[in-house]
Amino acid sequence: MAPSAMTRWTKSLSEAQPVPYWLEDPGKPHPEPALTGTETCDLLVVGGGYSGLWTALNAKERDPQRDVVLLEGREVGWAASGRNGGFCAASLTHGLPNGLARWPDEIHKLRELGERNLDEIEKAVARHSLDCDFERTGEIDVATETYQARQLRDWHRELEGKGLADGIEFLDADAVREQVNSPTFEAGLWDRRGVAMLNPARLAWGLKRACLQLGVRVYEHTPALNLKAYGAGMAVRTPYGSVRARRVALGTNIFPSLVKRVRSYTVPVYDYALMTEPLTADQLAAIGWHNRQGLGDSANQFHYFRLSADNRILWGGYDAIYPYGGRVRAEYDDRPETYAKLAGHFFTCFPQLEGVRFTHAWGGAIDTCSRFSAFFGTAHQGRVAYAAGYTGLGVGATRFGADVMLDLLDGEDTERTRLEMVRKKPLPFPPEPFAWTGIALTKWSLARADAHGGRRNLWLRTMDRLGLGFDS
Image (tube, rainbow, N blue to C red; front, top):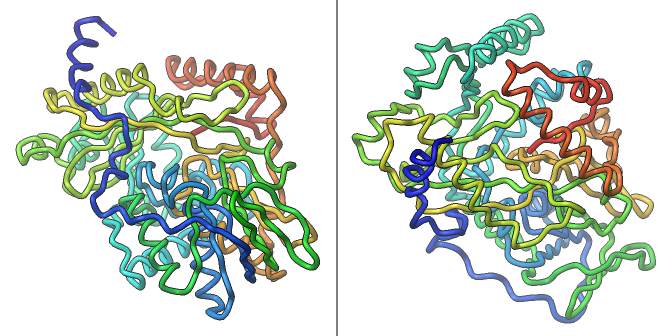
């Protein structure tokens, strides 16, 4: 990148606040008080992100008499659930390519369950009046290189042959630029119904309100410190008290699991995003985007971008940073060198928007696992269930994961618990320094593939054969 271009683009960041745009909302609710003393309940949910919130809500909707307590270490929605891009996808498998490669015999069932799950989210938004700017506009995967356009067309033909192309439309260069006008777009695949856009923080806060209205007791600023058997149930200690519960659901995702053997299955990935100022009518007209779809490009190091309700553009992705040792620390949330890189990529995509300024720039950790999609399990003779590893696609899939955890805790044999995806786990990550070395080599290889027509080197081909990977 030429220094003059870098200077021009980074000026757009001069007033950007290093905080998530979504969390700077005057409608943000006050936190619930911390737990003091001893609580007892039928179901204890640990974690106040989407995973925990959906578990608590669905548990009460399944059985209104069930006594449910939810613990959150800080405030509901403060982490990945409140600062993500707001893409709520039907896919449970981190996209059809990943699902088809790993579970070809189940892919039709997985797709059906994912579509049903997104429908249920849309119904819950209406039923509980969740004010989260829910728009089921779909998503376009765009090609920005000729080889990517060819791959998208070939992939669409493969989906047609497997009966999986319903609702997915291939767009050539003219058609995709008619939807969103970027000189970099060569083709696109528009999934018309499989993705909704929403305000992620408001979804979390709305779910919290719905839980409270149904009688869930929510305690914030109450980290769960340890988990152990207690009689026929479980006990969790907190800084100022404890909870005794018949069953426990763990929705802690990237944070260290209270079931220690689960920790090696996930590593943290730091993802970063920018948010522009609201676009003017002329700026909107210059880029089109009348149908307000979410967008993502087809590179290995990909970007995701979308319009907010007030016509800002969120632009994120590309860098996926793994810190040595898998540490989750607040100082990693801010990364100016990535912001500068993202700003340059933004104006390459939308040169007609030169002069637009960014108001917010932020980052944070998400959890990834070696198969890129959630895994599930139980501990303590079935009294504890967990779900983790959503790999950046948890806005929608966490509701499905909540139902899986509830099925497992209730000992129910369901179409969800019978899935191979639910019954089997991914391979764990190796200890350091092997994890960092392998991830660094994978990232280098992916960047090299992007620069060489998508050609995957021996390392990536070996990882593909083993079903391993690293993604955000």
